[in-house]
Each structure stands twice: as structure tokens, then as C-alpha cells.
Image 1 (cartoon, rainbow, N blue to C red):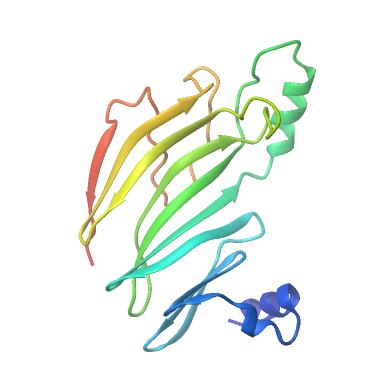
Image 2 (tube, one colour; image 1 turned 90 degrees about the vertical axis):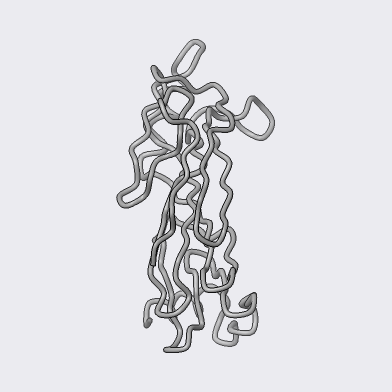
Length: 185
């Protein structure tokens, strides 16, 4: 909790607590997600390469979406810039992940990557980077993950390293392209 306190002060200054956008019992604070549970404040740190994009309480669950970048993103970009044309082998991506947590005494019940964007080739003004996207539907006791889209990504070029403890994005070349998971407590 001390690291969370130091991060909040470095992010907003000594009086920055009022800048935290609490949504009821939960808040997204840069690389942290916070839950004000019955037994106290709980914070999850996604590290220097992580960023919480959305958090919401849904009954007795918390749904948190975050991104996390692979460390070696620059290497794919360097290879891409040296190619006469085409894409390099994609080895570094930005992972978009959804997690479902218990609300009381928070713990992760479910984690799945729903998008993976290459950290190399493309920009807002040029072609978008290669990516794979899934659709996520969360109900009270289930999460349904369906393959949605792949842009400039193929089995031959898109070599993503999965995150530890997180189900990887469903790719177009995967056998199961529509999977439902039960949320157990």
C-alpha cells in the first residue's frame, strides 16, 4: 500500500487524492486499480508498462480492463523500418486484458486478453498496426470470448508471448473461436 501512496503523490501531488475518479467503490489510478472493500482499501499494481483503462463494480464482482506493453517493443519497430516493404515478425505487443474479481476481499477470478496490437508497424496517420481483437461478454456467472477481427496478422508473422496467468487472445487460426468460461468463487 505504501507504493500505491507514493505513486498517487507522484502522479497528482500531495493534495491529489481529490483527483482520483472513484466510481462508487472502485477507481482507476494510472497503473493501479483500487477497490474500497469492507475490510479496507485494496490496490492492484499493473507495473511500469501497465495502465488501467476501465474499472466498474458489477454486483459482487469488479470488472477491470487494462493494457500492458511487452518490454522489447522497439526491436520490432527497428526491424520494420529496415524492411523494404512488408511486416517484420511480430514479437512484441500491447496486451488489452479484462479481469473479473470478487468484490469482498478482492481476488482475480478470471483473466483473458481480448486484444493484442503489434508495437511496431503503423500509426494514427498510416496503416494501423497488426492486431487481433476478440469480443467479450460478461454476465453474472459467465464470460464469453469470441474471435472478432484480425488486421494484418497471420500465424506466420504474429508471434505473441502470452502474459503469465492470463488466457491469450483468440486468433483466427485457433481451433476454438468462441469459448464460454464459468466464473467460480
